[in-house]
Image (tube, rainbow, N blue to C red):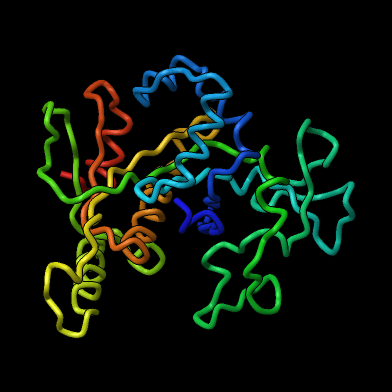
Length: 272
């Protein structure tokens, strides 16, 4: 969708960036993998078809999609290091020329993680908040590890027309400030705040129609699976959806054989 095409979401271990043409080669390569095709219930597409789909998704206000960047794969240059001797933002020191496709960025080019941003928007890394990151997309394609999506729709029953398994969550999560035990209370508070923000006007016409979303996540790189990234990423996009897209209800479609996804959404995120 256009509303998130100039937006990145900064998390502790990952950064979400809008799906752009620069991401197509890696994305197309991922979607030739039979395991990923089966896990995502997808069909292989040609590069031409992928290009058209990326354009369509950018225009479609019902589709909110982000590419996942892993912070431990983003090479940055600090004041103590020149361009030939960068460090990883959350990892050990590496040589910039050691890996094919690596790119080194100045630290100001990377959105800081949430714990380095204070209540006034200032960070512990740079003076003030840098709102624009023009080099982020083209210089971080090597840090792509997957994608995460919201498919918006009008609220409906918890089962679709063909009886496919859906897990849903009708409340939302304050991603940055809550502990797991406070999750439900915080999510309900966000919904209440939104419902009470229309100056007492309770007419149905004043509420957005697209108030539910199917949540879809794929960790394409095996090196970054089973690292509890899914929990952080889902809470991150659910908070964005609740706060910015007015989403009240989330659901997922999971095949019964996909035990890792069932564990993520049932056990860790509390979907029922």
